[in-house]
Length: 176
Image 1 (cartoon, helix red, strand yellow):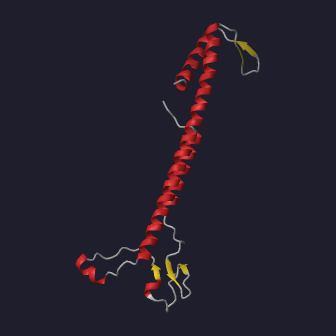
Image 2 (cartoon, one colour; image 1 turned 180 degrees about the vertical axis):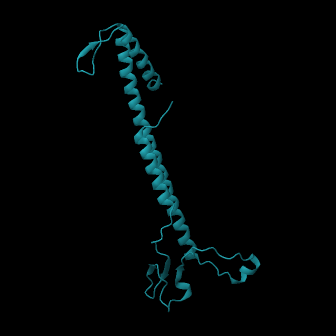
Image 3 (cartoon, helix red, strand yellow; image 1 turned 60 degrees about the horizontal axis):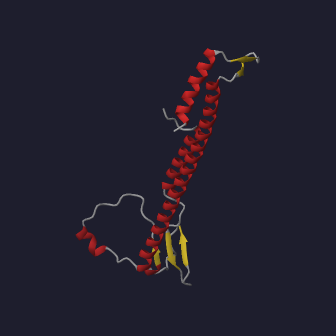
């Protein structure tokens, strides 16, 4: 029976929530990109001024609504040629998004590996303690416990057998 440690469950939920938020579109990101009269590149969520020439507009916002289906033969004459600057900007944005995605995946893998290493260390420590306790039980060493009243009581044969059974279960779960 394998159960997740409560911390690993929280980590998994946090990672899942972060990935869900990461996948949402950034609505506050600049949508328009154009070169002004001075040659500087401008970014805005509003269109460029009315006097801006068409070739100075480098990127336009993508319409969130669905577009009507147009046959390729009808769309070909109306399609404007893609400028090299716009395609370069799109390629750069794609590579940046890909780099961010790879970095997030690497961080997630590193976090999962760290959690697994931590759990393996805890299991090894539990195994070592259980093995030492089992040896004490098998050697017949007198073992005392504190009962509910706060008094010390020595384990009898039945108590020793029960402790050996319980310790064996702990060893089965932790000593792999």
